[in-house]
Image (cartoon, rainbow over all chains, first blue to last red; front, side):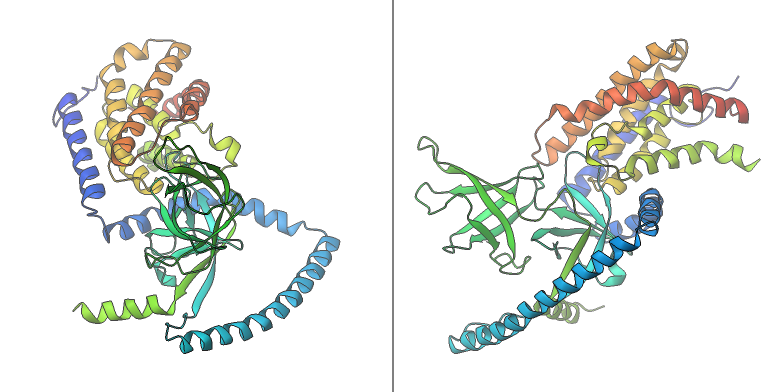
Length: 287
Length: 158
């Protein structure tokens, strides 16, 4: 018969050792944020598992796209061409407006808004960790994705990059309880902070005075404060306001404009300022 | 034979893949804790090969895969595998259905410990939905037990 432990410490000792080690790791990771760059390597190390887990879904998608009917492709093509023409029409106007806006801003001596570079990323996996809302996308450090980078979908802001690995990265959604985003009301520029509620279709607006001018249906845009999210992208619409005078603040809930539960293609943004910042930082830090 | 040497590791890798595989939102709620189940089987059947050390490292990999703080899953995993490995002689003699109740309790402990640790480091609140994996793990245990026992006997692992 095999002895249970032919060598090494006994079972309770092993337990105490590994629990202590776990607690030390939690404290080191969470409180001190000690795994900064190591996380990149660790994430890259386990990314084969993620690709493996993603394989069945990809195969389903591939076979589904193989069996699309000719007629449907034809219709899609017609619709997309139509959309492209309409959008190009709007874009012409946008270029003109942007130039005009830049000119007016320079007349007012305020800084001109900078251009942004975008790439499209695809959703790889949604985390099944019920306590946080994160997704994994298929762009990583080799596409020069960086931590804290804003992520959008075609409707609005989705979240920000939380961890980067070499070929994929992890996005923290705006609905996560640990996330908050500075916003302003599109109608009257009231500045607010929208924090995640833990449920995908709700954001909580905190510290709203009873007297502040908010209405149901107001659109909240990112305010650009905090220097993570660029200014002016839609974040959420207000869905309920409870003005209970016995409480210090009114309770305001908002619904994210991006459809956080059915993400597929996402946009990653690089503002020129952030890349300049990065260069400046790299120049300052001696290698 | 190579398969014989790697079969335990391979089963854990498959469990990890199943644990992170993307699923529709409705099915996602009921996803059993695959990794815990597979480790539980090996801790009951071969506690000399799979016990707290393996549980610790598997937990760390799970932490990296799920993006939680390092150590959260390994903490819960070690605790649960300790309970099973310490009582493996008694639990082995139970029928599969009794075992599945024990597994339900262990899974509940696992999920609650993870919740408590996460609650300490971030301010999440509890939803009863978090306990659905307990039920699905209990249902899946007899089938997994049968499958892994077949593999163990076929390959004569000890």
